[in-house]
Image 1 (cartoon, rainbow, N blue to C red):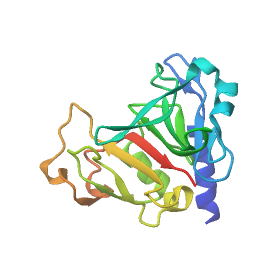
Image 2 (tube, rainbow, N blue to C red):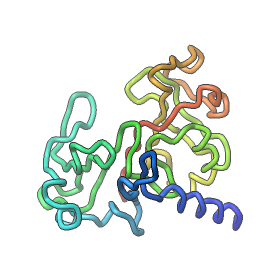
Image 3 (tube, rainbow, N blue to C red):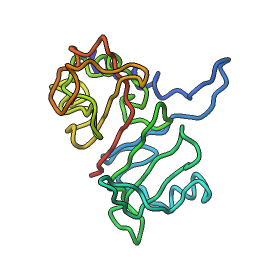
Length: 208
């Protein structure tokens, strides 16, 4: 257990380093989502007022947030015009805007991550390395394609809790069509998809 925790610590330090552009110039620092009671940039105790104080009112906007099936709910979007820092937040109290109940990031890359380094753009192989082994996910081709169903008692089971609490979704590159074997709402072991090596395109977090 001790070597595993040490390895996760090293991965966390490496993956929380600032995002960089070619040439080494730092663009933005990593931001941590923590659905539990610990430290982070967005935690179960965070309020909208705290986000405005830290990041500025122009970067924290009240708006309708899509929740699926064409429906929306009042929420908050941070950095709406910056794909690297954008995050959508729903609140347990819509009137007081305290205590997030749900947050989501989506795209090719993001400054936001969930410890120990789960972030947009990670490949399936990199997730397996963080987890210490294969995991189980759905196939591709629908609205919630590539959703991780179970970490199969790997390191991310302990780090993230139930897969339903931190939903991680992967998809193949848009230029690479998934093999017919992996299309549809079925369960697959990640080690059968290593040649395809899809990447994380969405992380959705439910808070305590």
